[in-house]
Image 1 (tube, rainbow, N blue to C red):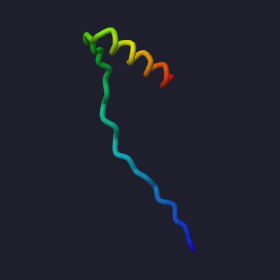
Image 2: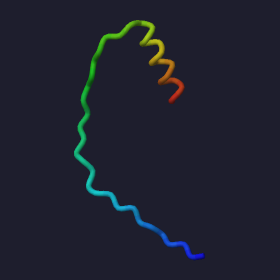
Image 3: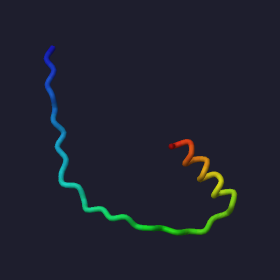
Image 4: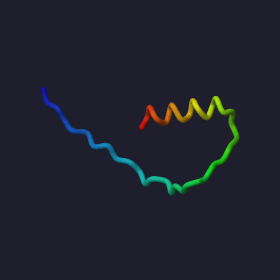
Length: 41
């Protein structure tokens, strides 16, 4: 059985830029988001 290596070729990446986003949420949602962020860190 022969195995052949396949090369993955990606095109050029799109230009990205950072955007600051601000929104209002409840204190309960903020606590959930903080807990989620801590779990992902």
